[in-house]
Image 1 (cartoon, rainbow, N blue to C red):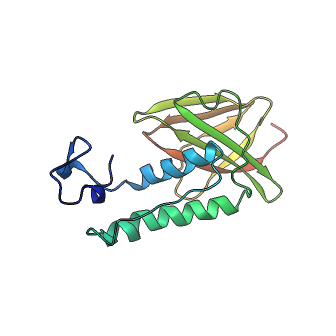
Image 2: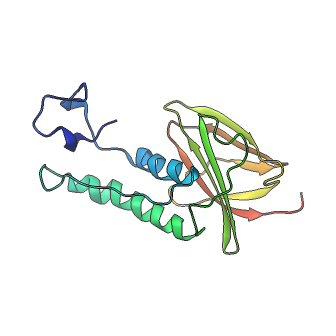
Length: 172
């Protein structure tokens, strides 16, 4: 995936034909944002070459804008967002997993860090035993469950991000 705008009037850009370059999808943008946050980044910024090349306003309004508004809203919910708990084994190269427990609410983020589908089951024993997973933002309803310290997310699509608000449960 490359940003088409960086190519300008060239025939190729970084080894790829310009005709194959494109703007990131909403899923890829969510991956960029939430994978960074799960790794405890303290900030995120974007820049644009819009003044020097043709900008796609539809992409900006229908893809980039909504994802950035969602991400901004999320960073406020578990503030400070750059301080999640990262369960052991959560960064295995294939997944990022982060947990925020705050007085205003708890959240769990799971990010597929691969361009392929994965069937995901993660152990959270000692960190989180059971909770109802409520999809937040653009997270799809997947039937994921968290019980007995085990997160069973099922099939996770390439670069997919799950953001769940947690309804903590202490009894089975």
